[in-house]
Amino acid sequence: MARRVRAQQQGTQAPAPYCASSRFGISLICFLGFVNMYTLRFTIEPNSCDVKNTTDSTNLSTVTNEDTGCLGSHMCKYGEGTQRLLGNFLLWGDVITQLPSGVLAWKYGGKSVLCTCMFISALVTLLTPLSFETNKELAITSRFILGLSQGATWPAIQTILARWSPPQEAGRLAGLAYSGE
Image: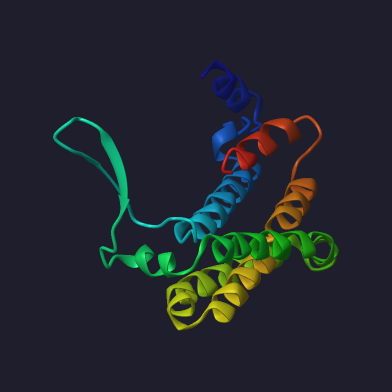
């Protein structure tokens, strides 16, 4: 408060609080971008079959798989090998786009690359249940496209932070942004 009074007496403006700065807002948006990416990635996980833990009369805990008809139950029709393949294709798509998306983010800006990849991720995630019910190849393709679109998130956020963070605040802003993972 004393800094504001002193600044008003001298005719200058007092510095804005850190949480009201544009840099903090950008870092908060990057944080929400990571939260969104991981939410879209793990909302529909191919290994999430409906598992129910029950206890019988002898107090022994048993785990059974029951088809309850909920959103994730149609994924259990694939075997363990296919479920692993689905996860691998997501990760390979993620790895493939790291370098090209970094070049695109530097050339066209991290914001446009991040918004584009988040839109594609959301669209593919909405279509994932339909692709899992249709056939295995379409399910694998949707997971691969999801990985391709989400692979651009890291380089895009790195580019945004590199352009907006001064060296003295880079650690604090990056810490906030990366705590969303």
